[in-house]
Image 1: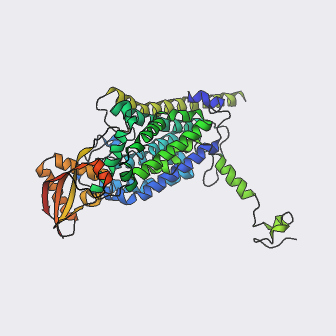
Image 2 (image 1 turned 90 degrees about the vertical axis):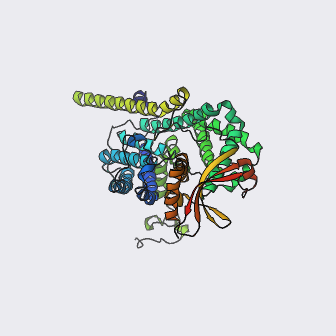
Length: 322
Length: 158
């Protein structure tokens, strides 16, 4: 399985470089920091929710009641710090798993007050995968630690992150067919869902989508949207073929979430940030491009290069040489 | 060099076994809820391993929706999730209202009092069920409900 693929390379034509999984680590870790900081006020507020609303799921399922306020505050504060260490690759053998556990506990806590959120599933799974994979902090570590030679095996965590994304979308598509059968593709269910979700938001004094409300008066719009939704979800496996299939599916999935935002005012931040789909992409090109840009002389010419770029005007940094 | 080569081979095998176990574990964990969806009538939901049941069933066109409003004279104001349940999450507030209404007049009354303590304006807080035609609403943003019935009411605490 993944082990054999590692020896051949990554299941792709050439071995996956350490930079790819390192960039993925940085992006996912940065998202964890951003998410946990943005949600910090709410995490601190939820610590004061009444006990009778406690409906634990996942790792909190066996808990009789919500955790103590001090524990919630500690978790809410620790998670962005651990996310930072995760992204930086520092002390990763400890910080990686610690970040995974903290994020799992905190995100599951969010889902234990009567609503199971579906926006953080992928980031929790991705952090878990990266925390368990060796070599994730072999490159691009803050502090410039040299890459460990020969550790290899960089492909499987990236591939697994992509597989998990595909599976999540397929499961979502299966749920739709299970609920309404192929009739879901007719668009009626989607039309009523869009209208219902927006109406419910209005009745609860929340932000809703005026576009979604107006569009749900137009029945013709929904059959193609319903078919497209099912195609993106049930067809997610094509992304694993690589090349244009991968790029096409990632673009379609991203646009799907833009559509959900526009029509239902529902934000999937992990997807809309693009980080959810990063594992499908050749991320090692990012540091390569940044290094090339840092090396290439632009209009602000270093004095040592004035002789080669004399038409670009005087140097703007450092004293003149010679 | 033979020993070094052996150690390297063993290391690669350990990484390979670890990769296989972790990969198999995650794939099974994420895929199993999908299997449960196919095999069970009520597969439930969880986190982070989910059946992703959102948007899977047609809610229909005419719906009864519980909510909490502030009545001041003729004016009816729908209260925010923050005022209803002390959260910024609309579905959490929704679930709180649903549970209160399902629990009967006593629990609806308790929710009413809880909300009234947060509303620092004059008026009457009411836990209500509104019946709407979603297609009518989609045509007219200010469409009035087909009907509204009050489950509990209590004075706000200005």
